[in-house]
Amino acid sequence: MARTHGHGNPNWTRDETILALDLYFDLNGKIPSGSDERVKALSEMLRRFPYHAEASRKESFRNPDGVAFKLQNLKQVATGKGLGNVSETDRAVWLEFGSSPTKTKSLANLIRAGVVASESAKPVIEDVQFTEGRVITELHSRREREPKLRERLLSSRRNSERLFCEMCITPAPSSNEALREAHFEAHHLVPLASTGARITRLSDMALLCANCHRLLHRAIAIEKRWLTVAEGKAVCGV
Image (cartoon, rainbow, N blue to C red):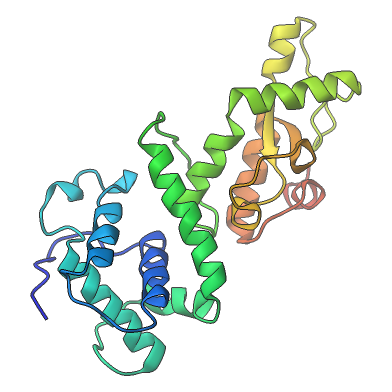
């Protein structure tokens, strides 16, 4: 196989490895060379990742030969045959998704959507990361900040006289309507990895104050599982 010339490039992330595993499943374990169009397409996608802007300027970064090499690594994890230069991330991703091509495909599609969305939106700065991975964490946060979705949720709560944080049960402190509503944020009750790209329903959302929303996201990241608002309340001691 051709040399990958990848020395000095960042290690493959979980998100990237999931995309490679998705292609591995599509190929039925038959690994092509770096000249294969499917390998080239994955290489191009990986070079678009929002958190690899500096590395992607190098021609060696996630080039097609390097992608083909990663597929060989995954084959070794899957079959015990082939190249032995596998990483802990390769093993962890295979352990989690190796028995479920369908689950891998669903998550890979969300990761691709997150990469595309990052190219046409302002960067989302998150200090937590869900187990679904960094790209999906940022896509989740970007959707929660969608102004139209938040307005729909606020309107629903106004009409039902439920304009309070559903976690700490505290109403907004200000008597000024604009300031009162600025107190609240929308929170997805179900992770995107479960719902996919479907239209968000109001029943999928909770209205939280900014403090509780931040605490709940942090608790989800620490617990490494999705928490309901009630579970988050118990974990955070609210």
